[in-house]
Structures are given as structure tokens and as C-alpha cells.
Image 1 (spheres, rainbow, N blue to C red):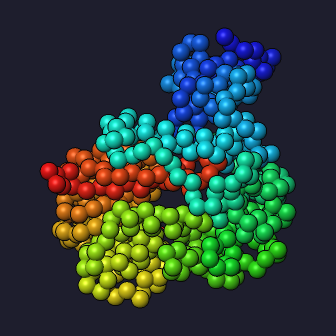
Image 2 (tube, protein in one colour):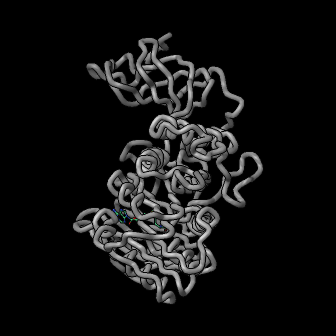
Length: 451
Ligand SMILES: C[S@@+](CC[C@H](N)C(=O)[O-])C[C@H]1O[C@@H](n2cnc3c(N)ncnc32)[C@H](O)[C@@H]1O
């Protein structure tokens, strides 16, 4: 049945279905924070703000007649799922802040949805059943994130605010849009970020303001990205912070005042993370992932190990501790600053070496033909066929694959299978509550082990 289009008075653009409303039955969850439905004509709808099993009025937000799929928002809930809750955040909902996807789902249901996405991606992209992937379907909450109903974990230690050019106020981007949703407070921001009071200041001339509150130190940092030709504001916040700026021409990040890095704590060690360098956002993430990787790899004294896409050296540090003086660890990372930080962070380990370069080219350059253990933690695109083939040829006893995108993970697991590796266990952690993101750790071993 087709519901009345709100935009029908003005008429949609020719061919465009934006504004068209459909009363639909919501099917399964899909990767990306939406569920699948179909229009009466059979077109696939990716519907946000809905839950499986619901009956809703979905309003198209993107797409035209004949397109492979349309995007839509559930604007009226006719039959609500039992997992639905009133979104705790006042900025969540159709057309509003794009930061969270599952504000309207109970926390346990959010984790179930993420688990269903992982299962579906493994099946579709790698042909793996849960049993074949060593996956029990459970997405674990981060320690301390199990809160009473209606309370939201304050987990984002890094928040990228967008600045509304008309008002100079910091807000958050709307879903798939450059428009800014003005906010007084982000509910999922870590307390250290909220305390900076970014939302109360005037940021005229800035494109964006990133606020960072380190875990395990009092370091606070603000990274300003000015619009072309704009002057930097005097940054007077409620707490002392270091200030950095993004060069609008080169994209490089430069110090304005204070330290050009923050100090993060994980695995009982302090890591320096310089301007724009990668660090896990959830305050429990680094420890959770180190633990899962070490439990899966079981490093032994004297092992040789690779930490690929090593950032500032999180896993290289944990491995170095465990393989001892007779072992050796090689980290590879493309970011120049991150490499400097990793070398600084791990300077106490003479048997750790960090190479700068892309894994694709730097790994073959090392001439390494054999290792005992491998950790890889690639960016969202994954490692890809050639790198996985190379890794599969090094004879590692175990490989830990840390993945922020289950689709890329599934593709790479299929390549590992071609290379003679099977998944021993796959664990998943909800390190991004209220959003559709999820972190996985897959432990692989040679398929013929014990055969
Ligand atoms: C998901 S982060 C992981 C960082 C680190 N393992 C951690 O947990 O802090 C991915 C890292 O890979 C780096 N990177 C991206 N593409 C790369 C490539 N092709 N080769 C090497 N490093 C790359 C990024 O700069 C980033 O530091």
C-alpha cells in the first residue's frame, strides 16, 4: 500500500522518489545501520530508524525509479517491535543527527542486530557458516557498558564536531549530509569531551572541531580545521587543552599550543598518540582488543611476530612484552607521525622494529619469509587479496585479524581460506554502542593443523 506523499503538493523531481512514502513490513537488518524492506513495486528499501518485524511508513530519502535500491527513514511506526525504545537522545531520528543508528533499540537488541550482520556477511561474502567461523553469534558489551535502561554509555573519547557556517555553533552532521544538526550535548561523548564545552563556544570560520579526551591521562586536545582564509579563534575552554590546526591545503596537522600529542594508557603502558594519529575511541577498546588478541595468539618466549597497520604500536608493545628478549616484533604502519610515535612508545624494546610504508609494499621489501605470529588491524577497506596471500605464505602458527568492518573481514577470511588458513574463533565486541559499528577479532590457524 502506498501512503500519501508529504511532498506530493510540490511533486518529486522527475524520476526521483525522494519524499515518497510507503507503508511497509520491515525485514532483516543489513550492514550499515538499516533494515531491508520492499516497495509494493518490489524495489529494495534500506530503512533507517526501523527494527525487524515492524510495520512502518517509510519515507524515501535517496533514490529514483528503477534504482537498485532506495534509502528511506521510518517516519511513523504502525506496529512497534518489542525491542523498540524511545530514543534517549533528543537529536536522534529521521533527518536528524547521523552519528547514531540504533538509539531506538534496547542495548541487548543493538548487539543482537550487530551479531546478525556479522553472521550474514560471513555467509554472503565468505560462504562461512557460524560453526565454520568459530562464531557463537554473541557480541559482547565493553566492560562497564551494561547500564540501566535509558542510560547511554559515555564512550566517545574523540568527537568530530561540524560547525554550522551560519551560526558558528558546533553540531554533528546529519546522516549522509553536509548539513549540521545543532546539539547542546552529545550523549555518547565521554565525560572528558563533554567537560570541554565545545557546544557552548563560537567557532565562526571553522569547518570542524575535533575534541579528544585521553584515557588514563588528563590530556585534552582540540583540533581545528579552519575554512580557507579564516583566522583561528582564541580557544578558551573550561579545561586546559592543547590546540592543533589542520592545514587546509595539505591536510597536515600542526601544533598551535600545548603538546602535539595525547598520552593514552592501555595494557599497563602509556602510548603517545600524535596529531591525527589513530587510537581506539572507546576507553575500554584498546585493553579489550589486546586481551582478545593475546588470548587467541598465545605468544611464547622467543616467538617472532608481525604487527601490521600498527598505528602507534598497541599490539607490537603487547607482543614485545610476551615474546621477551629472545623474540622479535616488526610493526608496519603507513602514517609518518604514527611511526615516530610507535618508535618512541616502544623504545624500551630493543627487539622491536617499526617500518614506515604501506603493508602492500613494505612487507615484501622486508624479505621476511617466516614468522610465528601475525596481528593485522587494517583500515575499513581490509587487507585485500595480495596482502592476505603474502601473509598466508609466512607459515604463522596463528594470525589475529582485528576488524572494524565485518564485510572487509569476511572478504579477507575467504582469501585466507584460499591461502590454507581456517578461522579458529571469532569474537565480537560492541565498542561503538548506539551506532551500527562493531569490532571483531578473528583468530586463524593453518587449516591442516592436527589433520
Ligand atoms: C585501524 S588502525 C589500527 C592501529 C593500531 N593497530 C591500533 O589499534 O591502535 C589502522 C592503521 O593502519 C594505518 N594504515 C592504513 N592503510 C595502511 C596501509 N596500506 N599500510 C600500512 N598502514 C596503513 C593507519 O594509518 C592506521 O594507523
